Each structure stands twice: as C-alpha cells, then as structure tokens.
Length: 376
Image 1: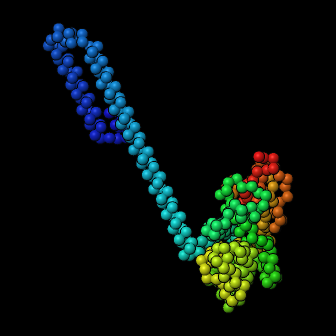
Image 2 (image 1 turned 90 degrees about the horizontal axis):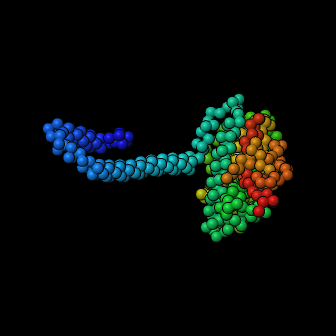
Image 3 (image 1 turned 180 degrees about the horizontal axis):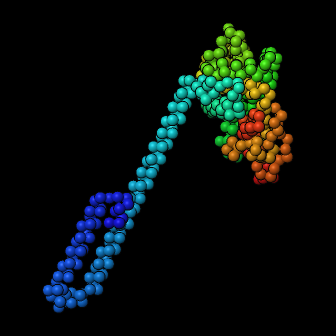
C-alpha cells in the first residue's frame, strides 16, 4: 500500500487494502477458533514452523513482485523523461528553423533590437548586438563556401593549411574554423579606416561631423537587405557597391568560382560594373558584406571611441581579450596585432574573428587554440 502511494496508483491501493482486510479476517478467525477449541488451536500451533516458512516464501514472492513493479515504474518514468526531452529538442529545432526562415525572408529584421536607436543613446551594447549578427552571417557564408568546396572535391584540410600554414588542427573538422577566419579577416581588412583602405572611398575620410554621417548611414541601411540598395544606376550607395566588389574579388578567387560553378561568371559581372549578380551565392555574400558595412558605420559613430584588434599566432591565451572558438592577447591600437611570447600550452593558432573595444567595454576576439612547440 505504501509503494502504491507514490507514484499514486488507485488500483494497487485497492488491491493492497483488500489483502490487508483478508489478513485481518484470517487473524480474527484464528482467534475465534482458539476460543472455541484451545486443544485444536495448540495442535495447529505446533505446525507453526511450516506455516512460517510458507509465509516467508509468500513474502519473498511479494517482494519480488514489488521490485518488478518498481523497475517497471522506473522504466516508464525514464521513457516519459526521454519523450519530454525529445519534445523540447524538437521545439528548439522548430524555433531555430523558424528563425532561419525569418532571416531568409526578412534579413533586415535581424537588427530589430536596434530599431529607433538614436545617436545620443548609442552604447557598447548596441555595437555588440550588431557584431553578433555580423558574425552569424560570416559563419553562414563560410559554411556555404565549405559546402561548395566539398561538392567540388576540394580538401578542406588542405584549404585550411593554405590559409594558416604551419598551424596544426586538433581535429580534421576544425578546417571550418580556418575557413571562417579566412572570410572574417578578409571582410575586416582595414576596418579601422574610414575608407576601408579603398582609393574609391577616400571621400569618406573627410566627412564633416563624421560620426553623425556614419550613424545616419547605419540607420538608413539597417532597414532592408543588401539588394534593396544595390542599384548600379544610383550613386546613393555606390560606396557600398565598391566595397562589395572589392571584398568579393579578394575573397572568392577566380579558380575557386570556376571550380564551384563551372565558370567565373559572377566575377565577370562585377568586373563589368554594370550590375550585380542575381544568384543565391552572391545574395548571401552581399548580405554578409552589408552587415560588415553596418558594423563599420556603427564603429565610427562612436567618434573615435572604438578600436579593433586581433591576436597573433603563438600569443598566449588571455581571458580578458580572447575567447576560444571551440574555449582568445591583444593590443587595441585600432588595428594592430599582438606580439607576445608563446606559452607552454594555451596558445593562439589563429584569430577567427577580430575583437573590439568600445569605450571601456572589451569584446573578445575569437581564436583557435593550438599546441605550443613544446607539446607533442
């Protein structure tokens, strides 16, 4: 009866109650028979050991029944827990899928947290929000590039070795981090310069009240996906178009595009300068580039109060300035790299995503940790 209380089992309680009443009834009958016939009762008592043995066996059987019932209940409980975990996992997958669909259909909405942002209220948290969306887009395009490499029969590990020669990977699958690094560092090249180091954008270096201009550009460009602004006939966003052309040419080599798509048609379209390719591949690239551009605008909206940094290969790991991509030492001079002596164990293999400092807030660079030379 006690076992049937938790978890509650009405049928088992009724059964136990009936058994208890039956036992009490037997005891009552024994008492009445003793009162009526003491001699007969004494004879029956002499057979007590046999009765006790039978009773012990009965209790042993009951105990085994209880143990079997307990195991059955535990199995059912584990099954319910597993089903609940599967339901939670399925719900999480559905939410991720819905988020991904929303991102594809309405890319601009990813910056909804920055709607109605005013220059007077701008702070490091806003920059961190934009940075997260930018990194997410970089990871997505890097994955697309990796998928195309594999379809083309390229060896990702060989590509990783070409990107960061002499840096051993801990696992073959870590080639994806080298590819993310290749994409990110290309996209962030000369990020600390107003003109991104491009001669065609030198007029951006002479903005009057430049932080206001950059912020206004950020607010306008944030509202829609990249292709809403890429009209070769318009001069309003010609700077963004020049940035896209330059970064695509440096990121997607002609040989790479030929291997992926049969011919470098998209590079030819960009070189011609009359239009932008209308392919899903270039659309994804353009959206990534737009987010880098947005982050660049927000970076300079802080009026010199922001800097970018990365860690040099072989530098010792610093929790203050780094986070490891799989668990990132730095200087923050607005675009430099770190020059620290390698440590004995946790050392930087390469920077995957640069870090930033906005005011007093440090946003760690993401690094891939490698073995030091002393380790096997």
